[in-house]
Image (cartoon, rainbow, N blue to C red):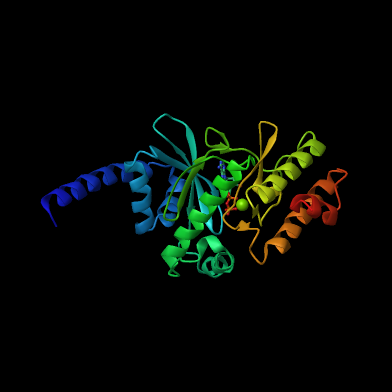
Amino acid sequence: MSRKVRERLEYNEKRIERRDKMLHHDRANERATVEEVFDQATRLVVFSLLNAGVLYEVNGVVSSGKEARVYWGKNRADDDLAVKIYLTSSAEFKKGILKYIEGDPRFKNVRRDTRSLFAVWAQKEFRNLEEARQAKVSVPKTIAVKSNVVVMEFIGKNGESAPSLKEVLPENPERVYKLLVTNIKRLYQKAKLVHGDLSEYNILMWKNKPVIIDMSQSVSIEHPMSNFMLTRDLTNLNRFFNKLNVNTIPVEELQKQVVGK
Ligand SMILES: Nc1ncnc2c1ncn2[C@@H]1O[C@H](COP(=O)(O)OP(=O)(O)O)[C@@H](O)[C@H]1O
Ligand SMILES: [Mg+2]
């Protein structure tokens, strides 16, 4: 190892130590969660994002799911960020991932070991969000992706994420339904993607508009399961809005509209 490299590593180690302390400054009840999710490799990923200046700090846990944890972070300009970290400990999840990746032409040449799979999963979410955004679908802006960590715009304020449709009923459900249908059409026709896990849990209400999140499982319309997934998404959507007495478009007709036939 050259002296230069060693110096650089030592320098990094020191920064890491400092950041490490900061990361552990979280409230006591959050500490355990932070330590649990940050296995050594993941910690290095977070530190490298801190070193690269993408992140300035990582604060509390916003959401703790089976497959991923979402943290509230900030950049140097004090903007809120969402840091989604896929849990490398979830074995069942690994099996699930393969199913989605295998039919997607964009991920033909990926390695199949656990760490790579999680990286692909995070890349997939990043890319899907990006493609959705280019198609003018209302999704969080992407900021960075590295290994199993995705950094994106924070939907909400001061570390409190915007409520999901599950948590807060929209004031004007007809309008929200229409907006969602428009978004799903754009996603299909322009981004050529199907969300695949659309439900009231993955739609946040922010500034009176729905924002669609959680796109790691979204698939290209070429995927053999894409039609099935679209039907399921639209069925979920209608089920939710029917309960709110919205005059929904029957799924079959809606699917035709989305596909553009
Ligand atoms: N960009 C974001 N801004 C604010 N909160 C977010 C963001 N992304 C996710 N969250 C919060 O984290 C929760 C879980 O995120 P999600 O992407 O749905 O992951 P999971 O796979 O765990 O369902 C969301 O319900 C929301 O509360
Ligand atoms: Mg979700």
